[in-house]
Image 1 (cartoon, rainbow, N blue to C red):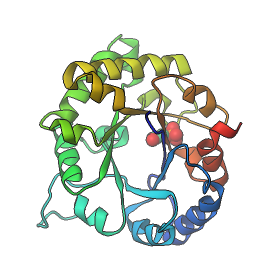
Image 2 (cartoon, rainbow, N blue to C red):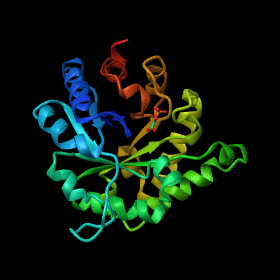
Image 3 (cartoon, rainbow, N blue to C red):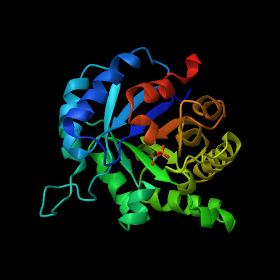
Image 4 (cartoon, rainbow, N blue to C red):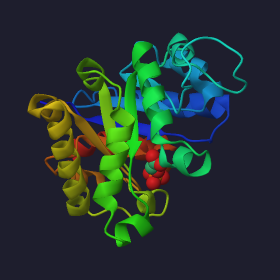
Length: 253
Ligand code: PGA
């Protein structure tokens, strides 16, 4: 059985005080959510305080990115995966489309970051997804399989077992335009097939594939009914504790 993961990506929102307020409001609302792993990804500057305040709860903390470098060094502005562990992170998001689009992040970067994160003992949420143009040109699957191959290159089978894939069609992120459950399922099934070809059936059956892109309290249940959707990466709707909790508790109607 694949345990679902519901992760909130807070992007570049919230002060430390605001992050703590939301995290503490969320904690009791999801305290009984044993059916899934609950993760939030605040900005770097809030991570330590939020992780400390959530210690002992079922809400885990993620970084939104990490460096390709594993060792301390002269890399101004970067944060290593081990530094994320040090402040209490259990997960890191890598290769988000905003990083690919606006910060020139390539598949090579994504795979190096994944390796660094896995060595540091973090679980990796690796994002893939096509743009609207790529979908309209009929290239969505080719783009996604290319991102998977690039992102996973150089990783061993045991590394890959600690990776979670988030399929986030770029045209659905922050636009209010969710992929239909059927569209999402189709791509998730494709991702699992590609994964099976590269890593074997067993690894593919265990792989958790999250959907991201305008996930809201009113569309999560339909998405989660799909056989290959194992959770969600939520942006906008994760910024408020009550709407994120509704998403986490999708199974209670
Ligand atoms: P959204 O963002 O839920 O606001 O569309 C999702 C994401 O970027 O991870």
